Amino acid sequence: MPDQTAHTAVVLGGTQGIGREIVRTLASKGKRVYLSGRTTDSARRAADEIGMGTMPLAVDLSQPETIATALADVDRVDDLVIAAIERDSNTLADYSVERAIRLVTLKLVGYTEAIHVLRERFTPTASVVLFGGLALERPYPGSTTVSTVNGGVVGIVNSLACELAPVRINAVHPGIIGDSPYWENKDNSHIISRTPLGRLVTMGEIVHSVEFLLDNSGVNGVNLAMDGGWLLK
View: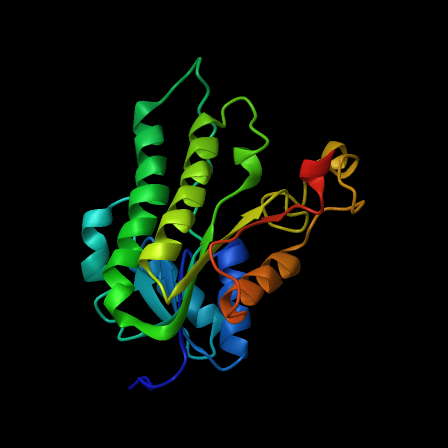
């Protein structure tokens, strides 16, 4: 039986990539961690592989009407990280309404509904961290929906920082993450050449930024660009 008094973290989108690394890091520090995948199998597999007592949840944020039932077993929340994303290249020339609606629903309605569902289970010192992205500031052909929803994350943070108080809410907006599974084998030299840091940010640095936003009780309503200075050039 899980210890209901333990510091409890919920990571929605915790089966792969950055979300998985966040789960691993929080669990390694003794926190009781729930991780979600879109299916029971994917969530259970990730929890078994990570170990350290992590507990699986099947949550599909693109189906917000199912979120309350999916999160029913979570008894308290000290940390909530919503890292679930869906990569989408949806050009105007070949526009898919179905994909656009799915992504908007997942990122804006799904993120907000998850917070709504868990709100009464937040502890007084709880903290929420959302994931956006810098396609908001640096759009590219096919990024219309991605850029739009990342702008929406800024809006969620700004509005809920007031509505959730004293619970804090912030967001991380990564640029290109050089050692992530999606980017590590791509030619990112054109991005590096425009980055004052002289390299791309790492998964470890993104995880550290999430820990900072979760733990620093003076930070609230912040949309943190994690890009090595890429937006400056």
